[in-house]
Image (tube, rainbow, N blue to C red):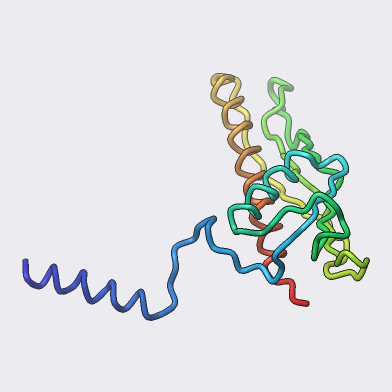
Length: 163
């Protein structure tokens, strides 16, 4: 029991001194303290980015000229396409989901910090006609995971911006 307790304490000390931190939403890491979010056809992502920035103590400005940076989000879309069809039944067997959004980051004076770029994720999954309800659920879960992955990619890109 003594060795177990000692081991736990030693591991805790080592991890706390090596710079290891659990992933979380509370850490800031942004070089800016205020932002304005302009969304064109990307309202769901814009809302999540706004919440994440507010959690990190970044002020969301109501006007472009009051913000240090302007985040432009546009063309959020998710497409589903058929990848394969059964040669026996002629029914769809495999699908691909493509979730994408465009982002750009500028200073309030118009200086470009991040060029306009398309963030796109692809996922594919098999469709089992014996488990239609489960497949619908899998589609929804994949969409939600892809949405969260895109949010994380945008946040990471915002964190690396320097002035």
